[in-house]
Length: 501
Image (cartoon, rainbow, N blue to C red; front, side, top):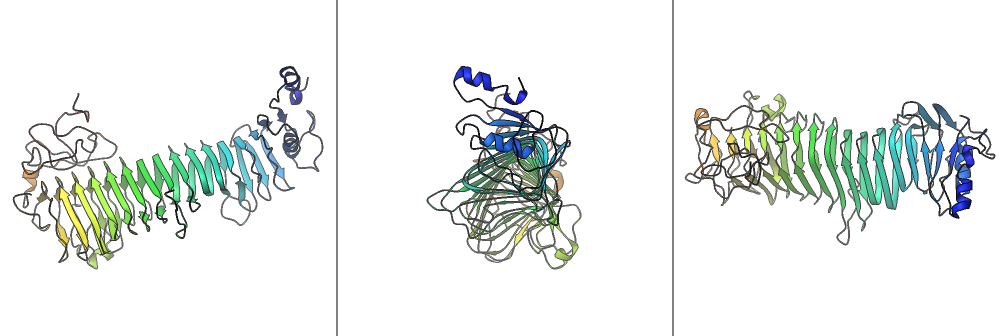
């Protein structure tokens, strides 16, 4: 019995439709004929699958090592679905002058590469890519495209390399795991919900949740994108739609050319992440967005603009930063010479914005370009609410008239001067470097580098510190000892957040 029809007898016995396997024996794309075990093109196999029970299980098409040329347009996808399996993503290649698969039946692709002359490689609503490569296009279009759109998206991508434009547009879910991407966009239909999950992946250029700024989100639905255990490098992230939510969890945002940016009333949650070496800020909060940053580190970020070397706040955005570390953030020489302000956190053009810091350790660089106003925190304009609790500011502030720390600001340490205007008695200023005794930036546990107070540091069990967060940046419990410590790290051997060792 041939492999092509090996399930037919079982189907007759069981009285139910069974999946069939078609083995492709040729690499060209002839005028479609009958697929047999001796002579079967990829198109003929796909057509044969469409003639099976539409309510049955997905059929399978097996491909050998080699390049398969499709010259007669997109292949059909059977209503019950097709699984196309190659030998390996660097050994089996499907080439087409147009989109390879265009119909909306379920489609699974494994262990192969896809390439299209016009760039549009694949579309559809229910797609699974497992160990698939989308290389750059053969033609003038800069890279292969994946365009998934519809009201019921069900997209799963695993262990794949996507070197072109990739878009999830509509409603439903897109899940990407263990993959490499160059340019990804996600945006939801008005009044619908799109849920994007990216885990264990690397993104090289841009991520745009709810990309189009004209998109409105109605009836409480939102577009959501969650990025976990991932690296983003060489690009930027933009959130341009109100009502959308972006979550970073254990993300390394490294050497990007633009910040994580909001321009609408979205929500951004950042947990256990690292922002390092970004050349035009790490974060830009605008558009009335609400930001919550926890247990994260901002290291060596800079900008050529006039405010916010690491974090910039404008408009009426709200920024809350808890249990986090800032180190060595700065400006270019040109920006510093123009009186840039806030090397770690800055603001400009604010109107009803807010900044809340709790258990933050911020350290300015040892060497800074001349002309910076506020080597840590500073801004132009007084339309911002400022509150800080239990934080260490090793550097300087520059606050325009009308901007000052509001009620509830206590338990902070400024070293070495008194430029931040912290209220005496509730905070400590003019603390010497030796009294602060802050150690070096390093691995003290947790996701990202931190500063730990040394032996005898005034930050340990600080009398002015109270009502502290229950755990530090590493997740170690607070308080430990006779009181709360200022800064992102609670000194001692309190390993677990529940205080059990």
